[in-house]
Amino acid sequence: MMRFVLTLAAVALTVGVPGAQTPAAPAVQALTYEMALQAIDAAEAEARKNNWNVTIVVTDAAGVPVVLRRLTGASPGSYDIATRKAATVVATKLATSAYGEQLKAGTVKEVPAGITFAGGVPILRGPEFIGAVGTSGVRAAEDEQISKAGASVIK
Image (cartoon, rainbow, N blue to C red; front, side, top):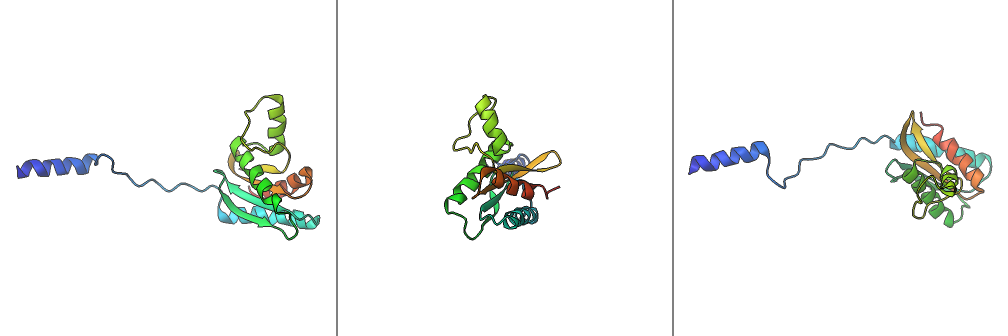
């Protein structure tokens, strides 16, 4: 009987116990905190150069905010719009302006609560999508100008 129990224990250790979880390998974070800081610093510099009071958010490829800045004078509502712009980019891998155009043309599916005007842009490292920048607080084209300034520093 003892030999049978030991054999079963050896099999369980070799094969694995049903329901037991193997630790997952840590996810590779393509957009680092340091990269997100570089992006938001460049975006903020563009906003300040033009005296624009905005909210800027930088997210990773999963849409999780890495850094966010609400400059003095930015409206409280700009937070929601900036984060929704970034979320739209993550969902579509498109700038929000391009998403709006393609949605109107019927070539993409609608994103719930998606933003269809400029201000959200993807962050690419080479061909790889690694995050998004969303800006809100001034005209849509100006928001996009700020977001592009941030995304452009990531290589």
